[in-house]
Length: 460
Image (cartoon, rainbow, N blue to C red):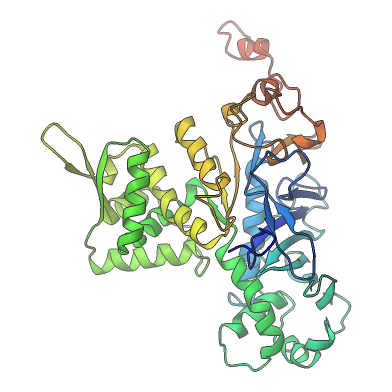
């Protein structure tokens, strides 16, 4: 939906994510999805925001590149960590439950100091800023500001000083009631989300305002990684019960040139049906995954959920998914979340996008987000990869210069995150080739002599 200026209105979009002392990140780093002067023509979206005469320029995709173990995955996991804490800190556990944070471990003070998470976003056409600092046992700082008239207004601010949280003038009465429900190890936003969901408590004013922000975390920052392939196949299988989505999933399977003529959800016995429902709840952040799940369950459950028909000499033939290639199963697991993300205009995270997919298929996946026709609601893709062909050369670029981020591990083991835009590459610069040459950093420093020495049978 566009307004009179041609800007998208009533849209959600992530503008930036900031973190510190989380996983491999010791110093504070920020990942931005704001368009710049280096944005490729037609890629950045102009989104209308309340109280501002000018729209904000937002990017629909960002790719993170770097050497192995440099922190490409951990920035995505840090974003997923924020989602986990928001969704579960109040609903799960009690006053003694530890918060599920992952501090930097290569400094002795890492576990002792707080971890920081913050986002800047557009929520239903209004700009918001939300963040918190936590250690293993308590929330040390938490805040939410919004800009309903284009100027910053306080929703709440909570500090570890023994005092009640501060609330904006419109929310003081309902805020005080809400504050009574807050534990030291639970976010106020998590409490507000439970109240907005109808827990029976009465502080509806601030809870109604914060409800959409809590819901944003439920429907955004889903991390697609190898470890939750089972849940994602279950999610795709669930979408097959809707004819339009089944047709879209089949179209994407056929577009990938996999020789597939049909996909169907198989009839499940009660035990498998319950596992199916639980897998979908886990993916949606409504239930935690058991640490004891074994890899063989992935094969059994995925084969029990979907069946593909392949073109053969004697016509279409059904094949159980346990016999499918890893690439085919990876593609199936991505389709349900992909279609949901595009249709709702949400933000999805993909770890190792090029892990099991052909480079051409990876490029088409990215193009679905970059193209305004296939992505009219400005859904956003944040991913990491190794494949330099994604960066492209002159005339064959799949990401803009300000959509490329790089990670490097410093001497102390901490990751630094920076944008390729800092190098101000020229519009026609061969980014892929120059990246491999080390012009922008983010590549391993390898010495062939060390490999040869390590494998020398005559080495003493």
